[in-house]
Length: 346
Length: 154
Image (cartoon, rainbow over all chains, first blue to last red; front, side, top):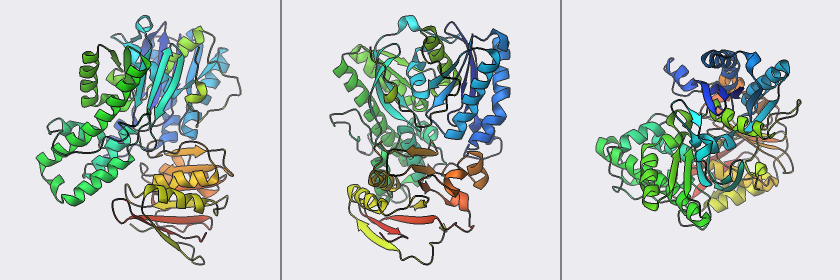
């Protein structure tokens, strides 16, 4: 029985894991919390984490029907993330582990994302038996990276964004066309009723011979486009077409680079996780393309795409079983922890 | 939007760049003249080149890591240069209280090294800026052309 905490950015989350089964996964979504006040922007990061942490952890234990005495280990995200936010969760985990006399595991947030596509249900559980080597796309508001996962707990970073993350590109383009921030999900919804071939936007770095991404230039493309077509975004159907065209540019780039890496490395499986994995076109088009190529596709469940402690706990339990990941008693959070520095290649 | 005032005793430095690469190169040169303890406000519209400026600035300080947008993470830190560098984006925050709650105030008041900050207005909100503040304004002139005004002279 393992308790996991996640506080690297906006979400406070706690999960209880036993033998790969998620007994509880509580996420106090600050976006939802703030929506009650009519606000658009979620941030009160650290103070919210401190306020949420104990209620969220108690709720997770209660849902799982366990007491702290049942825990064999406590885990938390150690990095990367916002320093003060990470400290709230990681220090709480260290304190709980110390009091209970059990090990504390410091987990890398992105490494946890790599295994979230292997969690399915209901009831949600890690399908380790189905695991196979894969190319994994982590794509969110803060990150866009491609990783070769050669075996369980063995990964190699292939590439990442040079500037903006894909989720950020969605949000910022939404803002340029007059949608409220963060508008990525709204853009996705409008795009569903638009024509993706209406306007032509660049597919950045799609044909470059490396696995890095760049989405910053897309903002400029859209701004220049809007200058050339003033008032276009005021026409509802033109706006939907624009959203569909921009979404196609981003999604085609993500999928094109992911599949190319899979082909080059000879893996038969592709996975995707992170908030943008909720994007409808990304899910749909990845499924179609992977089916055409005979590749196995594992997409993180929508409830596990955004930050959550379940994925942290699933990875922590797997590491714990192999004697990995246990942090020293005086370990500090690692706000700038890179996934490359953690490369485990057998 | 009103931007914080520059210190009155320094002449603004003005330049125009014709590409992202030129903006980065200029920022790298400016970084060599920046002093530890400074907090540098970056101003400019979406796509004006604030991240590009930050990338060049980090390179000028000798920071080896890859520089990317801090909008979602709120802050990225870069080490390994001649002094520590923090890159903040307060866009997602609403007020000075939010900045404090996110634990970011220390990087704005008395940074270890240099802090670059986008959307500093969220924190300053019309108040006076401390003496360690500097400003860079980026403006879009054309598809690739940018104007840059900076309130310290390299």
